[in-house]
Length: 189
Image 1 (spheres, helix red, strand yellow):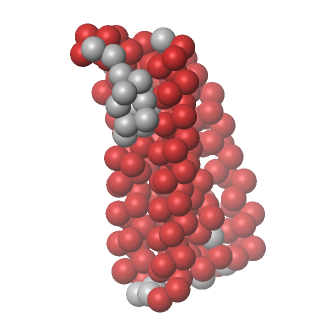
Image 2 (image 1 turned 90 degrees about the horizontal axis):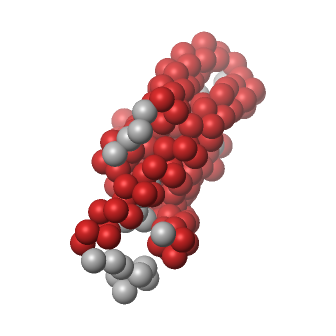
């Protein structure tokens, strides 16, 4: 038994990865597309927090949504290998996290009032990986960007700790959820 998971021999592990990737290919297109479209619902929050930055937020959310829609199209139109599935999943999750981080960066007090949004996309990453151990890796680019933006904006003290803890909690939750999903998939294989 691996880290809390039943394990197979090497050949079966490879077949499991291919089997799991094929199921995720079938399942991920709609949720990623819905997430891309739903990102625009937060424009109301952007406008309420700082109306002077609404056009910047529209531009940022458009780029993030278009990238996520491309990921959804890729899931729907291609049969991705496990590695390609992870790469597209990383792009989809990173696009969401980066979109939220950049909107919070341009909004007055964005990081103060919006860290819960930064926990959302890391948590969602649990469903785009074939292996639980990939969940923290998929979240790494977004997490690094958040830390850089906090540093560039000069945010320190409790706000920096709070934002970091929200993102960290999202990453931890994604790992736990991915672990449960992989465990279930291994017994269904």
